[in-house]
Amino acid sequence: MSKKVLVVDDSRISRMFIRQHISAKNPDWIFSEATTGQEAIDAINADKPDYCTMDINMPGMLGTEAAKIILEQHPDVRLVIFSANVQESYQEEAKALGTILVPKPVNEESISQALAYFAG
Amino acid sequence: MSALQNVITEATHFAVQSLSDVIGSELSFVLHDVEIENFTASHFSAQKFGIVQLECSGLLNAEILLMFDIDGIFLILKKMLGAAADNEMILECENEAMCELGNVVMIRYLSEIADYLHTPLESTLPTYRVELKDKFLKYVNSEKCLIASHVDLKLDDYTAEMKILFSVSRESFENLKQTLH
Image (cartoon, chains in turn purple, blue):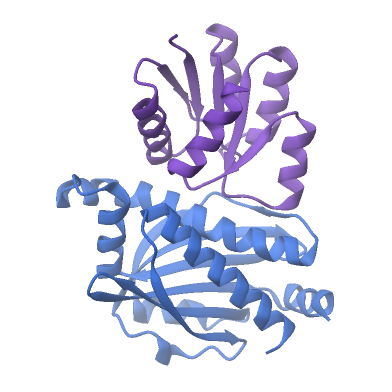
């Protein structure tokens, strides 16, 4: 069944890699993109996706702040934090939000982790 | 090896590993020097470098610079963007791709240091520029304390120069040494 995925990252390259890797395994999934936390919140309110990948370091609010708002309002969205920032403090924050931190870079291994989390 | 040198060496290894992950192939490399304070220009052979820079704050107020010689950058981007990327595409994407690559590599480096110090470190978004060695070396001869990792990276038949420079304020440097003591 086709799923909707929101990819949130300020880097065009990173968004492109995430889409490429996910769609290689799930060619019928539908993608949308956001480049800031606020854009992500607006996009999720407008067109609720099934899944979301969220960067941390972006202009404006941090991805973890946006994730907190999104998960409070839409607890059934499966969201993963995608970041190179694997400091223990961020991993604990992701855990407290009820999600996981998948280490960047975007490659087959990290995408597999995200897809496994999406699948529950 | 001092505790600081040990931390920087380990963080540099993690940085190179994450570069391998970005470009999708295991890189062979030699970390031939980690300089703490005694920064020497003689380790810079190439004339022009691509530099990704970000700032970190927290226990440490510092600038981190990731540098590659310009020919090395071309080969790294070719691997990162895939065989289908032609020269035109590489040039078009250079700024964005280097910011993304630099962000991943430097944040991984910084995460290692932050966890070692048991303190969170914040960082800014990266910027990228290309600079001549002479201009750059004028900039680094400043009041700040420099911690430099000098790496030789094997990219096919080419050996690229990779540097990670941690430019720390005197106060932060003292904090760092005390925390590691």
